[in-house]
Length: 299
Image (tube, rainbow, N blue to C red; front, side, top):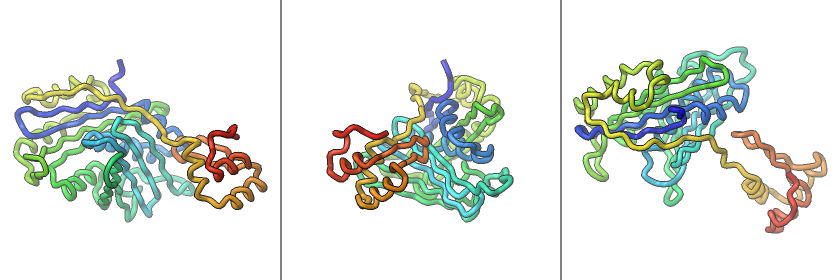
């Protein structure tokens, strides 16, 4: 059985620290190979995908979390969305007129921010913003937790793009748990620092080659680690013909008919999975008449 596309949660029974580890391959490849991304963009999306899985695992409710980078540098926009049940999708936009892209995280981005959006199925949407002013995405996420949650957090992100058609990414997160409900602990205890130091000894070769249980034993064999059942991670786009039709409902009917008259049909493409949805005059009548779906579609 593949050790990838799985999220592993674990806790340390002897110290107040929780952990998560994720490794991605098939789910990631749907994202990074959905477009002819340069390897630098593939690497950025890979790190973001691993990070988003780790953050989603912290959620205590059903919903969605999104990591979005907004930048004035070569990479203008990158986003990964994930749900509480670990389905992923993502896309990036960059200056395609450039003959080459810089290699480093900092050089790819300029005057950039990371927007973290949490959208629960029930309750209010929350959005946090952190400046991307650290050398790595992992350090920026650590800074986010320090500022917003005031919880000591350690993040490791790794990628393996050595095989052109099989991108891999991994992430490992440690976090001090609140002492009690609603409480925060800003102090990085000696125990947390010790565990973080152990985590830093993990190599990329070990992360991508060893079974999850062996990695945790390799790092923390002197600790009391409790590992929970793995959760599967998969790629899934939330687009649909019905959602596209709902968007067209907000556009003036005459305007839609003009487009159909000029182009033969309205074409809507999902920016994530690139699925094309086509709507003809009959569809538009149905959409604005409130009975779309009852009429034969024109996809």
